Each structure stands twice: as structure tokens, then as C-alpha cells.
Image (cartoon, rainbow, N blue to C red):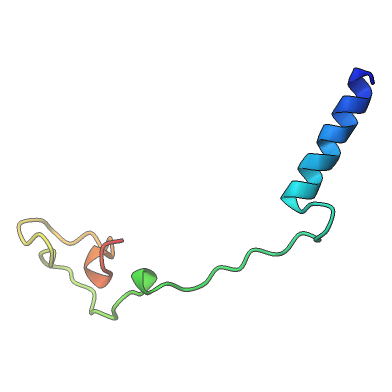
Length: 67
């Protein structure tokens, strides 16, 4: 058995274990998660709701759970 044959066997085993031979590639589905929800608050031109000593810069942190 030469190096070429061993490489071919290793490729076959890796492909079989990863499922590349058996399944076609599937599209990635992105599910909405509760941590991505943003609350509908009125935009503020005044102080930040989280840190009142700072001017609001519309970062959206106060509209979410901070994730």
C-alpha cells in the first residue's frame, strides 16, 4: 500500500464520517431568538435611559435585553 492509497482511504473515511457523501448541503436557517427582540421605545434626544449622565446616542441597548 502506497501513500496515495492511504490518502484516498483517509479521504473516504473523513467524508463518510462528516456525512459529505450521504447528504447534500443544507441551507442555514436563522431562527429568531428572544434575545434579539427590540422594544418599540420612543427615540430620545435627551439623556440615555441606561446611563442618565450621558447623552443618548441611539445605540439600542435600552430597547433590548443587552445581548
